[in-house]
Image 1: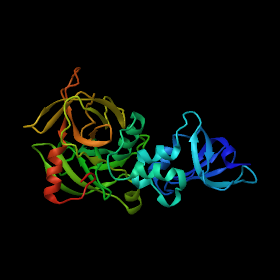
Image 2 (image 1 turned 90 degrees about the horizontal axis):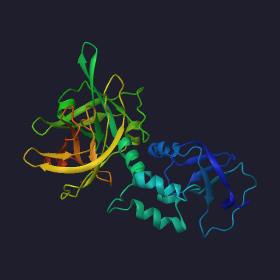
Image 3 (image 1 turned 60 degrees about the vertical axis):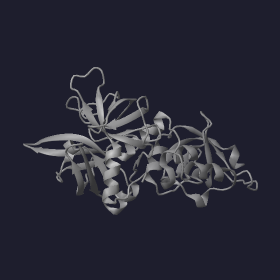
Image 4 (image 1 turned 90 degrees about the vertical axis):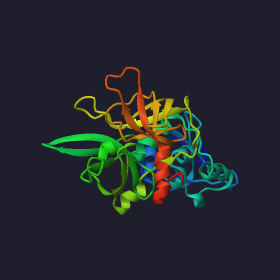
Length: 329
């Protein structure tokens, strides 16, 4: 049976690059890192989808004795024709890429996806996944059993993160909960605040490190701060946060909008994305998943979406002053 002839449904995901088919074929996707938890979470979305397998064009004809085999190849989604590896790399980036296992006709395509340079504009589903995987739920104890909630997001692979000053300030008693690409919060493993690096009450932002164990540190996803300092009114943006309009927290809610105007003196960007309490401290990004602001809030009982984000240019200046490494430096 030629490998290219196999077409079957994904029934399970073993790790960051391995899918199990209804035909009992175990498929290790070339070009994708096996240990990457972000790509595993992405692959989980495709359970139940039909894929067809593809070898390298220059490979000799390969055959297997039965469908009950373990193979290394590429997989294409039957419904859309998309290469599954390309989808994973567009969301996971260089961290998900295993250059040693990609060969021949896919190599240039895969290299182009992760090479340094302009990041691709993402479709909304991929954009949502990227932001959710990098965003955290922040829980701050208020005493008497009460809590307040907000959001934060990673901006470096060492656990460096950003939120609003009004979400955290210097309160290292806060707990943070990580999310996966589907917006599922891991409530079983809260993390503490390792260190508050800097907090600015005037412009309402806080830089801090999450106290992550080595295993968790390896699986985090982070966002780049934009290098485009000329973003302007009309730029399309998106946000992720954890609103709680009632007793239930609507974790990892994704929304879109545009930049409305700037308040440069106040260090704010006015946006019309529909955010409310709980979005505070979350990322406001462009469609390349580059951070342009920190979602801050708006007017209560606001039907016109008059909301604001902290201008990320202020944060970049402070990061440079502190000589801290960050994504997008």
